[in-house]
Image 1 (cartoon, rainbow, N blue to C red):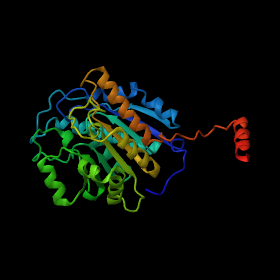
Image 2: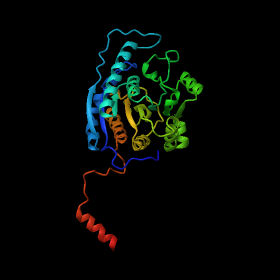
Image 3: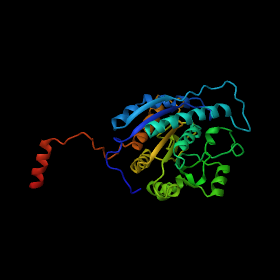
Image 4: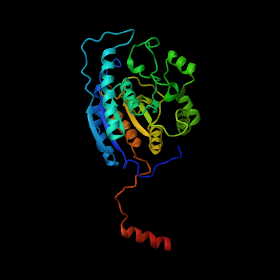
Length: 316
């Protein structure tokens, strides 16, 4: 956490954007509209304004199948599997061309494909899963059969959770059995977000050298900030805490992949949707260099009159 890049974060970053309009990982329509809602909210413009060289790759073509019967308690298995493979291909291509990828979704089953694609490029990557939910169910432990609660299938020492506050009993058993790195909102309240982020990073990447995959479900934040999401849980992270996480991770210079999941424009009224999109974009921009203390513009020269005035003030 102490190895910082210079104050011009954002200006050095080439970034590809991939839309992942998946909604079959859960029961509510609308998350397929999330990518466009974020674009309409000014995502690309915000990133360019802070100095990112952005290429929008458009949306993954899911091409849903009309008939997709459940398999062993898993709903929509063929659609999610097919979409995940296509997502992995697009993410891999984006990472190999731009070096950094922002995947905008879409329900959190999107992470099956984004992690797969990222692992093809950086097999040693680590995952920070920022979410109210652990999403580590299996078909045997899931009550719902919704795949957005089952996307995680990586080595136990590759992942750390931040913001948990709604964990199923089966998930809790898995986490405890394997001694996984899970930090709940109780831990955040008890230790503060700075300490929790440090613990999470030290747990998965003690050398501070590995590429980081951040998978951010907007329901990690309190519903007062992101009301237009499918499984809200009270008592979540504040925008302020999420901005701190994003700014600190940006300073590492190692965030190769960022997922934004579970923005659902079908939930709530126009005010709710706007608030959700704006809160989300405030956080996203911090991952790519927008800092609350302000950015130092690379091609800005301080006017001579101001320099002369300050010189006289200092002299006196």
